[in-house]
Image (cartoon, rainbow, N blue to C red; front, side, top):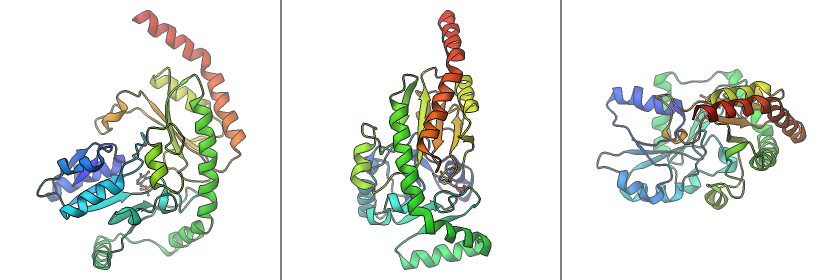
Length: 301
Ligand SMILES: *Cc1c(COP(=O)(O)O)cnc(C)c1O
């Protein structure tokens, strides 16, 4: 199994800690490789995993190019399509065999549901997955199903409003002098924007950025100073959330090294002006501490 090196942490853990015990050989590839995936495929490769945009650093993959190579080599492609959801990226139509979705996020939409789905156009594959899920006890309760169905009724409206708001916030943040790096593929100028524009029909509501001060305490102070954005790791709900990633742990993907701590925002349904005012307030509240830390760092070097 091949996975992109920016894959969602628990997916990495499932592969390197559980699948290896079951005898699966796991290796990682550069998510930006596109058709270059050919070089990573070995005679025993059965599955290529994709996640686009990738977790936290949000690189957009050339999924059609990867799928084309894999199809020719008889290798299955599975994709974690949680960021955009099927409304933003039609994974199966772009050559993916198995489209995986955390329904916890955009489908649930209210941060009160834990559920996932796998979608495929292959009837035999469906029967096999269904049987496997049954044998593993991976079933869901009727109450949870009712919440997912209720979420679906408003999903397209929520996603459209949240991604529209996220785009305005991304634009505002990118222009801020204390932001050194920002990733949001729907934003023109983003490293993944042209692929996003070619393949996606909508955006997600999650964006990531780094502060110019680039240290952990500054990132924590900033997040603590926010009043509307609450601390939280799950995303896609109606309430805006902020999460901080240190990026230096043994299970973190290598792309963090150049970025320093990353702040990730999930933009909810509050008024965009209120969210921007909240961010502006956090920049104001942390300015002096940041200047002091900068002077301290300069004295030490
Ligand atoms: C949150 C998330 C998941 C899994 O979500 P659950 O909370 O376990 O339902 C999977 N992939 C990505 C990219 C995610 O962000």
